[in-house]
Image (cartoon, rainbow, N blue to C red; front, side, top):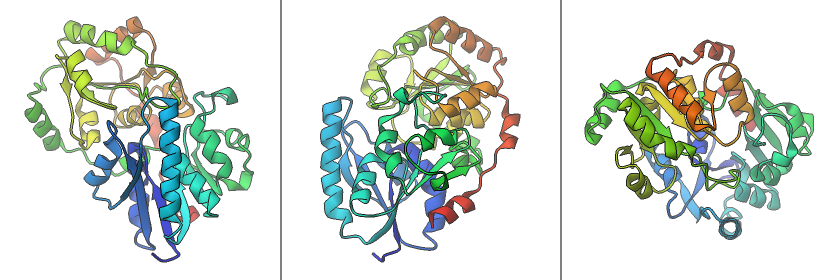
Length: 355
């Protein structure tokens, strides 16, 4: 590979979606190397890379839910990177706060171009809630890219200077939803495959990433509410697994568990309601105009912006959740999509700052 090879380490499904349009443009100008990681029970990222037909190298694995296993997997992956990347003539690393890639790039003198929209598990500036990925990557960044909802003050507190910060005027999922075209036929085929009667009230559900190091514990209220929601509203409950799918099938026999990797945005657009414990898919749902209930265990900066602008609602209470579902059932939970007109996607400016 030539010296102008740009290295992208994509270790989450979101990073694949976010960097997809950026990589496609940069590939027209220089070489690109894509790395990722796999691991038992964590195949979402590699499946998404395959779905988008990207060539990649899978190096290392996801460590699972325990801190010791995470650390072991991280150290092992860094050793593998050291052997591999040191022979690749990389000019710079681009990533969404990939701890292993950033550490190796920094150690090898490779400039780090880091993106992150959730430096804190908080929507203020409480640094006791700084995410581990942020602590381990932002201070090492050559340039730090962030959406407008994250205050500069947050990034400066990590030790960077003002001129290192690159701000963009949109919430992250807009970069891959900007030119989205809904395909009803694609969704109908999915319904047919799973035997879903779309004439019924249809709810899509996504768990929180409870094995992630920034989530303190697995909150049970959503799991306990699902059977009640199913019974009260005679609803289709469609589950998108975060990790393994077998336990979901066993725990919720009335639900439809989507096991293969799909172009999820079409399903998000079509359903009557989305209930999500994460961040990215919640935001996608908001921006596609679908009534959205967040059950995440914390509120980030972009969560707060969406809640304040009536794009979604948030709850950590089962009774309140049931009330929101009732509103959606009666088509009274309507997202304020007009606020999206105040944001704009400028991929060219991001690419200019990378190159």
